[in-house]
Amino acid sequence: MDADLPCVQCGYNLRTQLPDGDCPECGRLIDDTLRLAQLFTRDPRWLSRMARSMSWTIVSLSCLALATGVGTGYMIALLFNRSMISLMWSAPILITGLIIALVAFWGLTSPDSLVVHRERRLSTRRIARAGLLGGIGILFTNMVSAQVTSTSLTNLLGILFYAALTVGSIALLWYGASIARLVPNTGIARQAKCVGAGYGLVFATLATVFLLEQVLPQLAMPAFWNPFVLFALLYAVMTICSVWSIGLLIWFRRRFREAARLAAQRSP
Image (cartoon, rainbow, N blue to C red):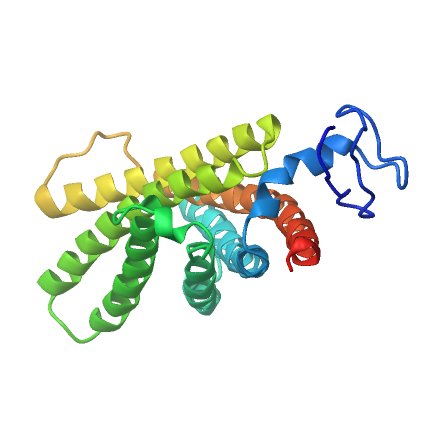
């Protein structure tokens, strides 16, 4: 090491130390500090805001995992003609999760004042913010209007919801990949790609089913077709991806908190 670099654990100056060694003061791997080196150049306020937004996202995903977990059990029960408690009680949990997601996504897609001047007008961060927040807003509108407006408007809002959510999700995954590269870790990056593929599969399947119902409502389905199987699988994948995402976010939140603390100490 030929430059000043404080240890993320104790602040010891690791200059002259070997990159594959341990901190002489606390024993923490120097590689842990090197992984956070890129974050040290970012605004400490942005790092803290990202860490808080990750906490909100964890709460939101917990609500989603609970709701989709119940949905999985409900669909399996219907598949075997078993009676089960109504899904209506899970609606408040899902709505609470969506409200928290609005706060979380707004924070996760907030700009860093130190680099925003280099950002393109149609950056993935801006597209992700517009798509996801717009999709959640359309979903709320659809849930309210379904009780008081025509079916055609409800269907139109449904199409707009899936379109906005798909665009926003793709942009968020792309933007999230650029954020994840600030804390390089091959294993974590592979897990994030798997989670992203799972979410993408669910959203693409739901969008396809919804569009087919609107465009080809009289489509003859095969005799073996059972929608309960499909939706049970989709709910299960969503539950797994949500729980998996929570674990990844906890890992990233810890790194961002450490970087925010050290960046604040180094800032004048």
